[in-house]
Image (cartoon, rainbow, N blue to C red; front, side, top):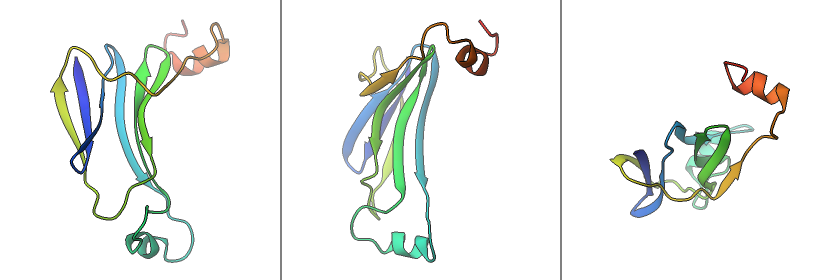
Length: 112
């Protein structure tokens, strides 16, 4: 299967993959207040408002392999595409309530 091998600096964080569905790596920063970007860029500690999530969807189940807000200026996030027979087990998974018609209508295009 196609997997995303995700690294922070020289540390492998996870190998994420699903047999069918979605895999994503999302790195985002939300800056609030005056000079938020300058404050974030000068931080010696974890950057305020930053988050990196490795997650996805398998079938109707949401899965997460990694979630951190402990990134600092100078950190390198690397994603390597690999072929593997298996991925790491997710740290979290959530399946919607079975038979919830509102959820099915919203998340399944065929409504089934």
